[in-house]
Image 1 (cartoon, rainbow, N blue to C red):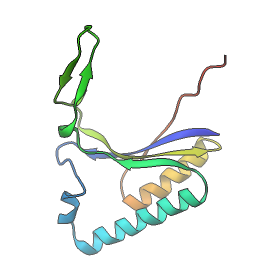
Image 2 (tube, one colour; image 1 turned 90 degrees about the vertical axis):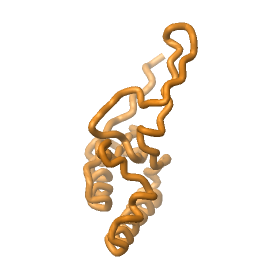
Image 3 (cartoon, rainbow, N blue to C red; image 1 turned 60 degrees about the vertical axis):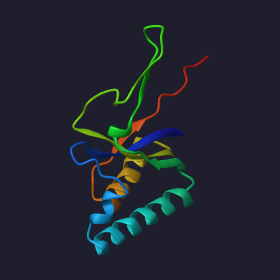
Image 4 (cartoon, rainbow, N blue to C red; image 1 turned 120 degrees about the vertical axis):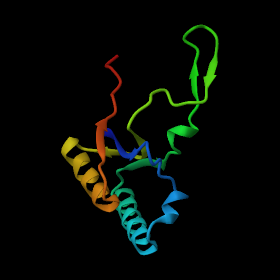
Length: 125
């Protein structure tokens, strides 16, 4: 089976976090969290979930660069962008169509876009 990376894009201008989500309408937040929990349970029960997680915003990023031969640690993301990956799932699916179906369910739960990308497979030896 192929592994797929399902990502949750966030707007860089607002950098939503778990803390800032507490400012949402409590009933709306509870509904979204319940929908996400239902999705997570379904993908886990189907045996498709490898792992998932939420990421802190780019303003918290460190970029390590040793390309010059000397380690440099920068207090910034590696690229400035309008959007960033705020969370993700890594799943296994029989094909892209099945991965898109999982992404559709995730998008429905979160009411936002979900990007689907296959992980590269190891080359034949």
